[in-house]
Length: 426
Ligand code: GLY
Image 1 (cartoon, rainbow, N blue to C red):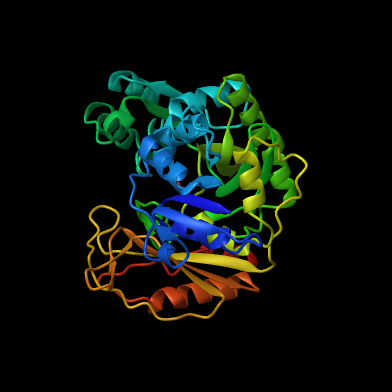
Image 2: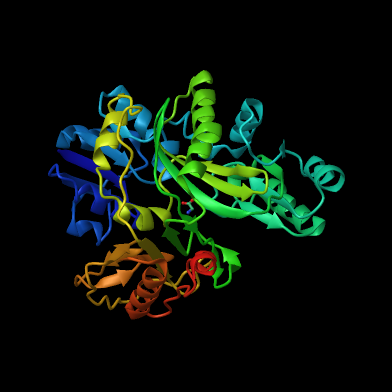
């Protein structure tokens, strides 16, 4: 089994780790990969966002399957192109990827299909968006750029003045470029957030265990939004009955609506949920595995990831497949980031990476090899450090301790990943 994995982050390192732990021996090629993935795969230099380059590589290497990690290649139509060439690919087509690439279309789809989500309006003119805030939404309110904005396009505004400023920056200043051609004015929801992933075949889903992300840079969920500073799984309130409820009321109707629209979704459907007093509601969908939740979830998996991925990529149905199986205990992932992240990360520093016990996995996210082979920092989020243990408290402690032992100039990490769970389970 030869697999081409696209991407270069911590999520892709965790995917590489899971795919090479399968019973079926896997020969892995990664494009472009990173130094951590290089320990599991042969790295190839292609532009992962160029459908023709990817297809040419997949054909030259005669791969069985292409697994797409990030959203950018999906938005660029890599899966459409691979499918046209008869190459099985895991991920949605460009049309189905709009669940993530167009928040405006997806909100309209959810509202038309009665899928639980916050009420919102979409606007192209700042004057009209501000009028919506002033007369219909008030504050707090959420302002969102409709398109892809590297995790920064969602602004929770506590006052109307903050909302007006966000609207100006998105629609008039175009701080997110064309992603801000439309903006959503959305009702503020209260509750706990939950990330729930499911492998989807267009009709049915195979859900994974729930995880909770930590989007803010600083402890206590303070500071600017980031791509995610840590995650943990399982989440005690994410019970089997909650997952069944989300499947019935959110995943399956969404797949139905996408089929009806002519853009059936196959791949990994990521539901970002808010557990409100009225039940789970969709905050957003993503069309790929989450980062860093994947680095917490996949090390807990004891059944095959490859079997359902391969099935949906070949156009088969997964309705009758056995549910995923998970080890007991808990998994906590702490992200170690560069100083200056998220606005202006300072990179290029040598890394001291100690060795860890088998219960700790260090996933590379923003690293590269220098000319002399030394490991250097090369991105905002540098490592995702996952610890597995029998209890949540032990996993949290082990993840924090392991993160503290990774050294490079300016390294920052949160010591409180999972603080909400800690207050629930002690
Ligand atoms: N963890 C947030 C994301 O992957 O978008």
